Length: 220
Image 1 (cartoon, rainbow, N blue to C red):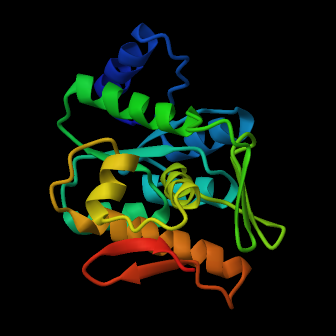
Image 2 (image 1 turned 120 degrees about the vertical axis):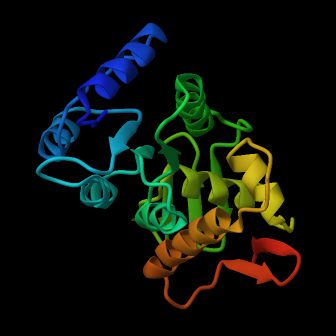
């Protein structure tokens, strides 16, 4: 956890330790980077406004080397800020002031989805995409693609249902495990990021198809 407000840091540390999590908490972006490089974490809770290195810059650096889930925390409630952070690879965004129960529930929901195996099938394949569900690894034409937790879950959902058309509501409720209230920005951003990452490895391919007025599916 990277949070520079001492009271908030202590409060969140106590919350997660009481829920039997091991917490490494630091107070600035540089210490956050150092801790991340020296340890292995299941999830990062990251404030935006940090001394020495901002949260969005640290998020970029984490995404360059890891697909560990990252949950952003900030007092900024602007839609544009949320969109920018989701584009950078954040898995969720929590606005201050927050309810402690909600923070814990969101973190546990992300960790549960990342670790859960939907079926015993170990590998899924679509065209030249191979998803290894044991190693949580995705390759395109043999080259590894680094995905965020939600990007991975979206791709896994598509690959397990290769002929199904998913509405935005289907995708949101399947991946975020919450009622869809019409905020399509989150879905669009994650689909766009996923498309871009897959296409980087095979520029000629177009894997995810948009069906106007219907939703998304893997392109036959």
